Amino acid sequence: MALIELEKICKTYRSGNLHVPALVDLDLQVDTGEFTALAGPSGSGKTTALNLIGCIDQPTSGRLRIDGRNVADQTVPQLSDFRLYQIGFIFQSYNLIPVLTAEENAEFVLMLQGMRPEERQQRVRPLLERLGLGGLENRRPSDLSGGQQQRVAVARAMAARPKVILADEPTANLDSSTARELLELMRELNRDEGMTFLFSSHDPLVLEHAGRVVRLQDGHLVGDERKDG
Amino acid sequence: MDLLRLAWRNLWRNRRRTLLTVGAIGFSLLLIQTFHNLAIGSYRQMVNSGVRSGSGHIGIYAGDYALSREETLSYLPGELPRTITGLADVQQVVPRLYLPGLAQSSRESRGILLTGINPELERQINPFLKRIPDDRMIRGLDSRDALIGDRLMDELKLKPGQKLVITVQHRDGELAAELFRIRGVVRTGVKEVDHSLVMVGLNRAGRLAGIPGQVHELAVILHDSAVDRPPLKEVQALLPTRNDVRALSWEEAMPNLADAIKLDYASQKFIFAVILLIVSIGLINTLLMSVMERIREFGILIALGTRPARLRALIAVEALLLGAVGMTVGCALGSGATWLLIEYGLDLRWFITQELEFGGVVFDPILRARWDWPWMAGMGLLLMGICLLASLYPARKAARIEPARAMRHH
Image (cartoon, rainbow over all chains, first blue to last red; front, side):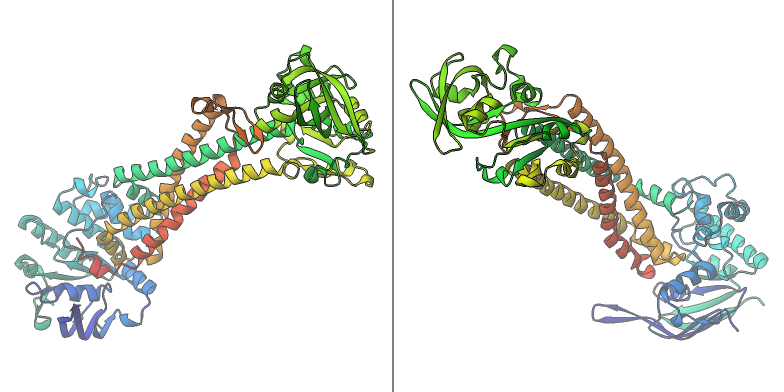
């Protein structure tokens, strides 16, 4: 059974009297351990698909199952807990909490899970070290470069060891060498930890690193290309 | 890093706005606490001044004399003054006889209220008699000396040392008159009183009215420590069941003063309520702004798995912390201002030159505050409660944020 299953998913946004289809009858399965990119131009439905898979938006129709669970059957607190324990997010503009240090940001999801401070530190410190953030633990986001902030965001997404990490245009605000470095790091984590990564991106660099590229256009699936496995 | 620490840091994101809000809470608490403490201090001064020259903290009367002023409602106090003075809380029991009458000089006559007093006891507690020099006081219960209101003396065109004839109704219905000599002059500042006051020895007044040994009022003066919890029941228990003699609190015996204080404090409470309302609106505005500025961030928090209830709790904790800081600042300022008003007082003579009368009582123009710690603490907690209430709407708004839409928000 696939980790993520989208079946005839439609998502339509309303803008006044206008109905704008963002996704149309999308069928997609993502298995555990995949390193998949959703590719397509702006407005193709990549971010919408990620939001639906991340349970932060609801489809207009169709069925979405994650880890065997039908998302439509979950209550709001259940969805919160589901995101908390099963999904890690990496956003285009990092979205770190400005009043927390790099370490506290990385620990944030663990704090929400109720983990004790010592345990959180034990979990997060090595991760920060591995992401090249050793010595920067006590810096606030405003004192970090874009690349460093995105690494903290990766640490936050990975710290809770979720089943899937969703990354929306993770390299959009990074220069090419930082973007390459970050992608290699995520690929390494994917191989070592077996975590499932699902990106949305139109960055050729991301597509180059991805094990599978799912192409979207105007909300339709127009291509699905596997490079490995 | 927990909710409290996160809330605390969030509070100081916009330092200027937080400081302004803390200032508003602190200033409102300063005003409320200081004016309350000043009010209760000045009410205490008025009550002390009023009860000492009036009914006492507890007044003992026959029937409904306190209300009707029916002069036939006099009674023989017997051993009551001695037994009541034996109560630990009682400082003094002062007997008085009140007789409406007429004062005549060789040139004028005026209606008066002849008050029979025990000059020795009265002088110990009555603030107006304390001002009279020793050689101007009535010499004993039976003497023909009289103290007279300054306005009355002027109207009768008399001077100290001159004589006047006082006529009252004898208990048998006849008129009874007696000659007195002005020994001293009393100035209470209450126009009506200074126009009509004549004080003479209690025994002399009693005999003149044909009710020797009787009184209309026993004014029970309490020690300061007992003023807030007058031993009304204990005094009542000492009264004889016959004669319909009963003990009344000063509020019952001097309803004018009690009502004036109630009315004055009610208007203060209204002002307090307006201040609190203004602060509440400011608080809601501050908290709502702080939520609206962070819509995107709340969207992120929800996306990361924060439950809506936890988000509501975060906003509530931020509001409570804001309230706690404001309360600390306000209590410190309120305490400082109260201390100054206790030590130095507020001298109303800077603003008003005439004598100040309130509820039929002249009071000291230097108003002094008084500590009311439980009330001050209560107000601080009330403000914290208002902060919590003010956070409900912003917290509800934050918890209803749709993360996908919020993250598109800039």
